Image (cartoon, rainbow, N blue to C red; front, side, top):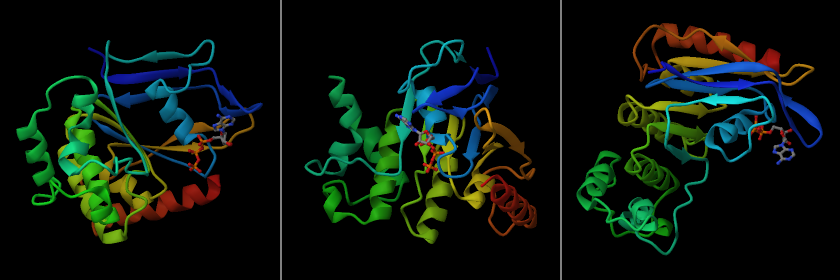
Length: 239
Ligand SMILES: Nc1ncnc2c1ncn2[C@@H]1O[C@H](COP(=O)(O)OP(=O)(O)OP(=O)(O)O)[C@@H](O)[C@H]1O
């Protein structure tokens, strides 16, 4: 079995301009890859190509395990306001006409710290609680490939820190591509960090070293702090 999901891209044009350049991306199976880069550089475009939400350009090739199923988690929680928490977490199964595994849904709700809120509607939950609900819904889908587009950017710093730790634990063993603007988030969670740097023919990926400690890495780890400073500098150069 391949050890990574590969995306061979001869380039990607959108709106009449070269967004992504010619590159061969590798996303190690069972690992978390963080994708950073200036606003508008093409991070979400790359994620959408992986998700099949954008057609691959001519000459591109996606090497993924056959039938690799995907879960998507974005910046907005996309919870349905008229369903309660349990209804939202089990929505995917019901949309597919399957009987949801209620015991698993309840267990995941407890794991993300929302036990006791199963009957609450999204409007009754705080922003951080709604993102935790979205995380539970993402995990309920039990997909091997998880694509996350700035999943924790809308919550306050302590909540974000807790959600990162939770996500790293609950996503262990899955292949995750995480788009983030937060160098600390990338260095706490990722096994591989890629910076998309703008270039004349379209943005190109550059690997950035990660500390050796296993994820989730503590924010106060001196190696994490040093890597964060270096990554911040690199992102400023790329902007
Ligand atoms: N459907 C589209 N049609 C035309 N241009 C598009 C389309 N989608 C994205 N773009 C352009 O492609 C570029 C890359 O967009 P993308 O959303 O991938 O960037 P990003 O790195 O995710 O940005 P951000 O960090 O701000 O979310 C931008 O210049 C954007 O305007």
